[in-house]
Length: 246
Image 1 (cartoon, helix red, strand yellow):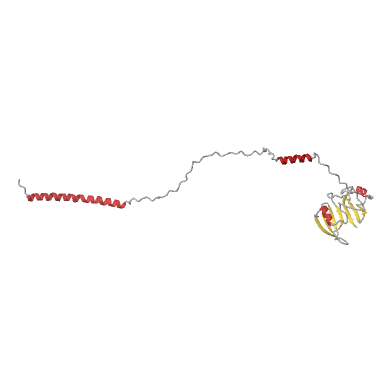
Image 2 (cartoon, rainbow, N blue to C red; image 1 turned 180 degrees about the vertical axis):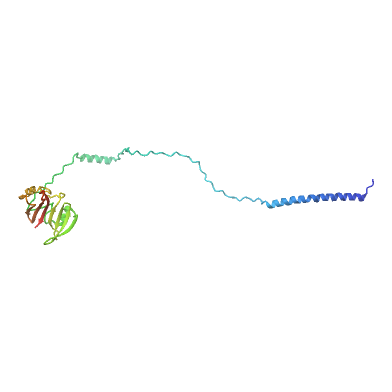
């Protein structure tokens, strides 16, 4: 068999050309896929190593145990709590027993002794437990400080009046008592059978002076002065008693 070489060469060249065309045709597709892959790879961020972040410590809590609240009953106001006896040491108890044995308490209080008032004496007159000539210190010692004081001008001298409950006392410039007056039942006369509010006839009898139903003043001369009793014009009862310095 005779082979025509030029024809054979042309066929072989055509086959190579065809194969080249086929490879060229498929190459763009591969390049497109490669470019897409590269674009995707460049677009997607490269995975980075996560930064170590310390989580806040979580406090470990043991499961809460629920407890029922304690209910306390309020105290009953009508119930009185029992009194607890105080504890005493043996020495204190022994001392208390000895004291009780030595001085047993009396079941009854001793009656107070009646104060015996003196009778009125003309030679040593007194009224409200004070005498003419007493000092201001003696008055304060007996009755304390006065509630009120004020001057009372007189013909010869000014008298300072000290006011007390139910009575008043006059002191001269030498701080001597020259005037005593009782004008209320709150003050004690200090004289037996002589009181504020009594009948004038009884007062005259107690003083030993004649009583006059028509007079409103009973007077008695005493050593160093006068004793005067003013009577109510309607009831004829004593409404004031005065001891005056002459």
